[in-house]
Image 1 (tube, rainbow, N blue to C red):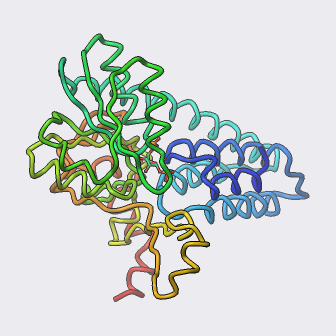
Image 2: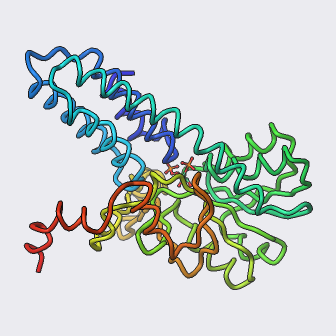
Length: 320
Ligand code: RI2
């Protein structure tokens, strides 16, 4: 698919879910590199960077997007010719696509260990990583009931219902505001992540932090399923994850809103769950407590503190 078309689909949420967004962007970059004719290496790199910028400008929150794009662009670093650069993008991109799919599978296997036969599990939104855990436990023969939320205003809960129903898992569908009412019946919550910060906070679909709060109150285990490329290196220097605000028309129809001139509608689509409410983060490299999030950034994303200071020291000094 063309970069512009992919970018539009990501913006409109026809392509959605942090992992899927990253994979679609990488596929678009591979396609762009294949079709990009440039007279020399600097123009090729420039063309790739422009394509990357268009993809990055789509949605600001899911860190999987910049992480995956960074991975593909840095593949060109050692290239000496346009042909080598094109090949490097293809090879690094395809490796990412493979490892991303494998990561979801592995998360499912690891996450399933944390589901016990007879459990009632609650999930919020539609996360392929969180669902991978539930589906793997189901395949292992564990009896489960799942509560799935509606997820206003995008209703991604419907996508989750389809997956669970296709697998034959008994499912209860509830509105978002019913979560606390049912929490005493829930043994484990499984959600995905759009970003995990260095201090283990989890950015995920709006409402996740309320689910976490209710789980904390009821002493229900709260588990996050997140590939290592959802961890956000830049948060080491205190950078905050931007929370996307979408069109208010998704919440209240423009016709209705026009009748209410004194009303302002807000539509933040993500929120931040503090590490204190997260029991476990399941990655493809193993499950960790949120306090160990930095180890993922250092050991699997390759950002040592030293590397950070070397790269960002000047910026950092400017800030103080
Ligand atoms: P996977 C989604 O964002 C949801 O917040 C979901 O929990 C998260 O991405 C992770 O999804 P959106 O694109 O990568 O629906 O686990 O706004 O599929």
